[in-house]
Amino acid sequence: MIHRRTILIGTGALTLAIACAPAAFAKAANGKPAPAFSALDSAGMERTLAEFKGRNVVLEWTNHDCPFVRKHYGAGAMQTLQKEAIGAGTVWLSIISSGPGQQGFVSGSEADALTTKRNASPTAVLLDSTGRVGKAYGAKTTPHMFIINTQGVLVYQGGIDDRPSANPADLAKATNYVRAALGDIAAGRSVAVAYSAPYGCSVKYAA
Image (cartoon, rainbow, N blue to C red; front, top):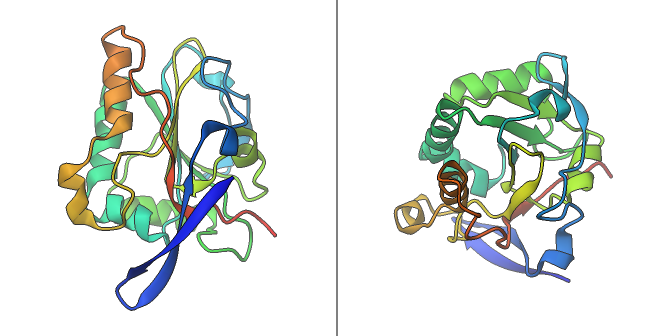
């Protein structure tokens, strides 16, 4: 079961979706091969998980209109994490699973403009307007994060950190699970926190 609670941000109401248990959202299982996929990137090129064989891969579900996503990008935190990961040889794929007419849906050129405007640096932005990739992984929120190791095994899935709010001030107090998991992988350790409850706006799949 996915519990939802409504919080107030400014003068508007926003639904915060939190998955409370792995079985509630996960189709992709930790410790198992990550689901294969192919999708067009913002430049119209087909990208596959297989092309990154032998590399660590971060999957970031995103929606630029989501306040939780704006929290991380507006403060520069997501961009910093992207640069750290890519600098260490990790592949970072930002995935937009918003369907046509839904919040967060963008064209390839609009996705590129957002990347430039926000000074973001993912390896690629994948456009998953059919929701095929998102549903294969059980992506529920934006952001929702997954990490695949060099053996192609899913080793982390869940929230980006332990502060389920849209307030940028909370970033200073947050434990970033993605950064910690990548650190564990780099050190040759098992990922200490391999699952956490994802939080944010619900993924706006096609109706």
